[in-house]
Image (spheres, rainbow, N blue to C red):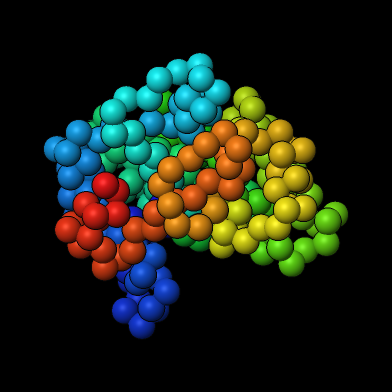
Length: 217
């Protein structure tokens, strides 16, 4: 689970620093995955595997990027492409083309690349667990519609902002037609029954390559 792939421009921004993995560190992490036999797979691959329709390779791994920052396009994407890897980028549709976020052209190019799957991260990155049922449903459904209008195909994957969800929110995500949804709950094993509350492993800005190896193994 990643956010920014960048050098944090503000050393006083401790949260930004924690969420920022540098270009060089990310490159080293991809090199580690390749050299240790990991194969990146998409969330579509995971769904097919969980339903028994496809076998996954040995040591499969899913890379996800939250929020739709512009360095997903400028920095992460070229490294993924050059290493023959795939990933998912969760886009906050209300932030598209705002300062620091990808615009529609970048999102569309990623989607067409075969490298990056575009998923929804709501309209405005609100805590869904604190919203009314109507507001939560709007965030979940309208962000899906916006991306589907932009990309011209179904958007199947969702990410809970800040990992916050309730049983009611999960039901709304299911009702909207998403096939998977990711949390920030720690873990790296999945079943069909938890496809709408998938766990992830967070990579921090200060994660060393040794720690990275421990997290993914």
